[in-house]
Every structure is written in C-alpha cells, then in structure tokens.
Amino acid sequence: MSVAVRLRDFGWRPLRRRRPVLSGLDLTIEQGERVGVVGPSGAGKSSLLHAIAGILGATVPGHLDGSVETSGRVGMVLQDPAAAVVADRIGRDVAFGPENVGLAREQIWARVHESLDRVGLTQGPDHPTSALSGGERQRLALAGALALDPAILLLDEATSMLQSDQAEQVRRAVGECVADRRTTLVVVDHHIGPWLGELDRIVVLAEDGSTIELDDPGRLVADHGERLTAAGIWLPGIPAPPPSRIHDDLVAPDGPGPSLAVRQLGVELTSRRIRGTTTTVAVDRLDLDLASASLTALTGASGVGKSTVLAVLAGLQTPTRGTISGLDRSLHTERSPHTERSLHTLGSLDLARQVGWVPQTAEHGFLTSRVRDEIEFTSARLGRHVDTDQVLEVLRLSHLAEANPYRLSGGEQRRLALAAALAHRPGLIAADEPTVGQDRHTWAAVTGWLRGAADSGATVAIASHDPAVIDTADARVALTGRFG
Image 1 (cartoon, rainbow, N blue to C red):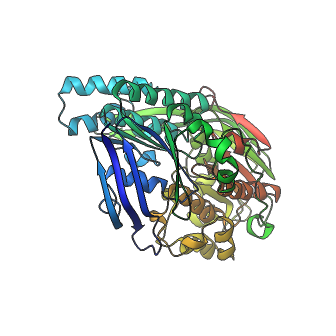
Image 2 (cartoon, rainbow, N blue to C red):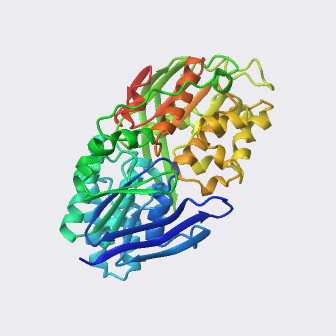
Image 3 (cartoon, rainbow, N blue to C red):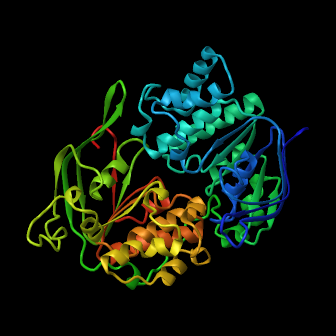
C-alpha cells in the first residue's frame, strides 16, 4: 500500500512562542487509511492538520523542523468555518476549488450540486454565504472540500456546531466519500466517539509531546479509558465532569442581572451585492423569557437563529420588530441614569458595562496582540479590577500569557474570548457555542465560569449544540426557525 502522509521528526513552533506545539513527531498514514486524532486542548491537533495541508510556515508563520510528505490533492475543513468562505454565494464558494484546479464548467457545477446535496445544505447555490449560521458554514466548508475530490481529506472539528442528526448526516457523507474513492481521511475531534465506526486507527497527542497509536479504535475505552480520561480526552460512554467551582470574586456581577421578556422578536438580515439585495428572515415572532440569576440554553438545528438572538440580546444586532422589556434598571448609564434605552442604541463603553458577549468566532472579539492584554482590555477602560493571573490559571492559559491571541489553538482562543468578554463581570452574558474545542478539563472550567456567574446573580444565555453543557442550564429554549 502506498504512503499518503509521512511526517519525520516534525516540529512546529508558532511565531513568537517560546515552546513548540509539536516536537519530534513521526507519523505515517497509508493511502485510503482513516485516522482519528485526539488530545487535550492545545496539544497540536490542528497544527498537525495544517502541516499535512502544507500551510505552516507560510500562510501560518512560525518555525518548522523535520519534514512532511503528502501524495495527492488535499481538502481541508478548518476549525473556524468562517475562515474558509471565499465567495458571496453558496454555489460560487463550493465552485472555487474545482475552478482553481481547471475543471470544465459542467464538471464544476455537477460537483457543486452533488456536494451540497451530500452535506444537506438545502438553501440553493444562490443563497448568500453571509446569511449562514456557524453550523451551516461547517457544512459549506465540507461541501467545498468534497467538491475537490481530494486524495486526502482533513477534518478539524467538522461537526462541532451541528445538532446530532445533522452531524450524523455529515459523518455519513464523509464515510460514503471515503469508501467510494478510497480517500485518506484524518479527523480531529474532541468528541471522537461518533467517528469510531469510520476509523481504522487512533493517534493520541499528549501535552508532553508524546504520541500513542491505537490500531483498534473499538478498544479505545477498554484499554486506555482511565489514562485518557485523566488527560482530559472525551471518550464515549464516560459522563461529562462537573463544572468547576469558580470563586465569586472572578464571576459575580456588580449587581443583579436583568430579567428579560422578549416578545414577538423578528430579525431580517440584508445582504448587499452589485446586482441588488437579498433579505433573509433570521428570527420570526420569538417569545423568550430570561430570568436573573439563571442560565438559559438556546438549542435547535443550525440556521434557526440562535446566534442572531444572542446578538440582539448583546446589543449588537438591531431587531426588525418586537420588544424587549426588563432592561430599565440594567441600562441606566452614567450620562442618562434615569432614562431607559435599548441595548443596540448604547455606545461601546455603556454597552460593555452591561453585557459580556462571547462570539462564536473567537477572533471577532480580539483587540490586542497579547493574551494578558486581551483579558485586561475591557476592564481597564471601565475602571474595573481583574485578577488576570487568576483568570489565566482558571482557564488554563497561564503558559500563554505573553502569546499572540491569533496564534492559539481554536479551543484556547475560545477560552480567551470568554475571559476577555467576562472578566469585568457583566450582569448580562451572551455566549455563542462556548464549549466548542474544549477537552474535559477546559470544558469544566468554561462551564463552571458560566454556571458560577448565573449562580452569583448574572443573566446568562448560551447557544449550544453540546448536550453536556445544555444539561447544566436552568432553562432550555428550542428554536425551530419557523417561530424563532
């Protein structure tokens, strides 16, 4: 059997980082082999995929050691699906890869339609990419990768923002593609359990740089369950850990959060292009109650409006219709202490005093070039004290205090985004998919922070497909798309 991927004594150290993410890695993957890669947050899983894709050292700056050899065309689904969008329409986006390898027009569009159908993206090729949810962008990125007909397919947390039935459809599409074309598959996923039936081998990356290679994925839990669980790796059949207990000094708001009543909320999103505009109804006639000192989970399939609702609650999206009451006390500002105002009309400082927004795409919230500065940025401008060293320790970021936020792993970026948004202890919290990319230890820290803020008086709303974090909520609201 021919070799598809070979890494020899491979090492990778991101720009301006003192310690390498990967060091001395030797790995061989045969053509047509299906390999899962697991490990704690920050162990180098995404860096391994980036190395195979050939983007380290050029597109992603840093220092390389050793060698990487690949055979055949590579298709990759990035952990941040928004980073892969290159066109304003779904069809044009999926066509980008086939166009760049010189396929004939009829072949290109046959592959576009086939790939969109495989991943279950039904909006049509002329639908704006800007109107897609995070989960829909994940499926769009996979469609683009499949349309290339790659010899090697790399998936980085490709189902992390999908509901279970949608995730199963994606795994089925990948399995069919691999079987039909003998494609080499490398899957990175914190929750590897649902993928085990598709895999021939598991590679475990440890925090100390060592690796474990398991040739029988079915024996993963029986032979290595205790060791891997202790290392923070999610394994099938093992319950989630309890949320960490975070000290009130880090999470308790200055005052009680508001109790909000959302009535008949409607949001229409407009996409503009040269030939006109397209309006998409993102939320329609939603009624929602959020209690003070509670955690509410917004659930539902990708594309039903969860992120849009959070953006409205965070004051970042202007609603088209409907009302939000209960904000009067929480929105008193220094300039107008006796006047009730809508969140979306507040200036940035007044809004920051009231609301902490944890974005689905972590990089959208970054404002500095150093992790420590990122955590302190908002608090410093609001004149609020934050124990930065304690925040770093709780969220397992201490060793990255001097690092550039844009050079972190996906899971590390999400924890930093949470710290940056919530370190000043706002009374209203809106967190979008906050546990994506987390191992068991960091999941407990993130969930513990949100749970602790709610228990201390904050009003917390999260959007999530993670059943474990949903189980920690005081209330759950399932959005359907038809009525929100």
